[in-house]
Image 1 (spheres, helix red, strand yellow):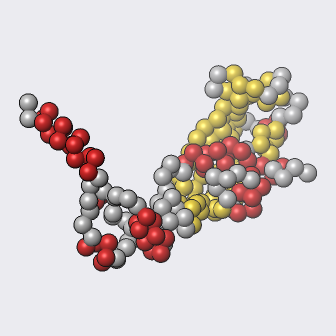
Image 2 (cartoon, helix red, strand yellow; image 1 turned 90 degrees about the vertical axis):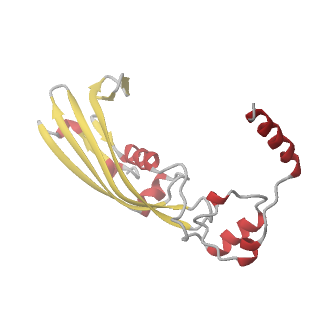
Length: 190
């Protein structure tokens, strides 16, 4: 028995009309997928298949949350996920694609939705994922800030650090930039 057999939908057994399949995607599911992007989560997935003449319209809806490391402090953070996508499937001689339509062999007739659901979740995760302002691990944020050479004022927000020594420290600009800034100022005067 395949580890994703419970995600098989036998399309040949479906009568005309609409059919709803529900799946709970938990830590065990992500462990089976074995992908580095997401390893933990708790989501509900609905797969709604409408059987039409000659093809199947598949609607995927996923809601819940995944747990990913914060890009700033590396602590685990909960990230809400809401995703929706459609897929059109029809029977063919072999697995393949015909434009936007997925072909599956008629003699098999089964659609496995496990990987489609995972791809939807992975694509719904923003490229940058950080805690809300003030929620990062304070010890890690302090260490990061200590080792930064320079940080713009607008980037200071969200670190949640109450370090008076850093706050009172005057920022200095690398003297090599002063010459470039002078050139820019001279050009702007003309």
